[in-house]
Length: 238
Length: 302
Image (cartoon, rainbow over all chains, first blue to last red; front, side, top):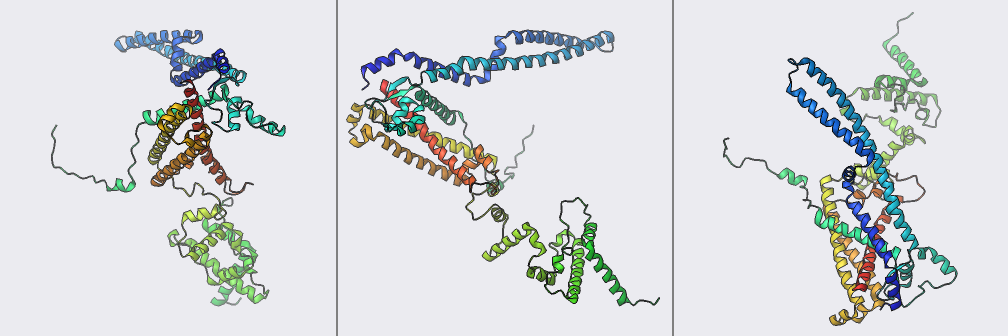
């Protein structure tokens, strides 16, 4: 059983686990919704894109109106008006093209900006938390002797333990953990295991639920054996 | 000036031709006939130009040389005849006398061309087996057959995309089911190990539910499960005639571009492919260890 002191220590620093879980969930949500980010940023209406977008919409509306007007009049009967409109249409077309290019440029700039924002607000803080509280024990294993001592050492002290193992051996220290009564799972190891399990669950859902069944292809021999012949003399009339 | 007889005319003409060929005119004549431009990549050097063909025999007697020259003139005539023939007529015929000169000579003109030598050797080895040489075996030999080198992509037949899609579907589904079944069994086992009361109710053998025996049992289970998985995978590969690793792994595809020889590590391709196989097994083991760790955490809170 987990000692009481250990449980108390765990509860007092549970915020680390909650914040880490929040980061994991946010990362996954962003991963799942990556297809909608472009749409979302256009709805959000960032100032640079918003201005250009409004201008584009107005110009497009004007173009459509003018185009419908020009279609309604005869080029021969109302030649002067039709030509004037046509000239304006050409001008608007050029303007729309320019605005479109500007819009795509601004969107790319925003995408870059959002990427940087994600790096600063999500990736770097998560990495910092892992480095800062990497050795924080998330939970203790039910039994200390479940894994070999070396593996238990990695669970409780993280991958750094593997790097320091040669030094330990040189100093003739034990390979095992400091405590033989309880083995804790550190935050870094827990997050690594959790992300791996989540990824595998995704794979299982994708392969067993979402992927459609692929039919076996017909072999060349079978394809050749398919007979294309008329088996009925019935004729359907239209 | 007296009239020359026909025989004398022919002799004079032959002598003139021999003199011309002796001064390297054979290649230029051949080029002229075959229409080769001077910067062509095709080899049109005539064996008549190389001194070894004429000097193949050790005896430097003038009469012998004259015989050699006559032979080379005959060779030239045959060569011209073969060139003027349509390509369907096959290989140009060679005079037995010239062939014997080449085979007997210490350094024949053919030995300068390693590809021809290689094909000749291959033909010889295949004929000694009593079987016809096929293209695959020639490629195999060219890529270092017999030195333990792994087969190159030339050996594997290109896989039909529909078959590859079907194969990948089967393999992915096999992987998914094997992971799911393994996780079901492991979660049950972890629950029994962590909850003493549950294991006592089921009256399982003591060695199985002892915490110290968890890791050996887990590793043994992994070995058995991975063996079953690979057995199934191999049967799928055999039935579909598709190599999963070679057709799907980007690293394996890049490795297949490496030349068979010319790098310091022997059998590099085979070693990399073997490492990829081992990594696949190790990756599955690591995934299961991660699952066990998370399952133990869940069980500790239950």
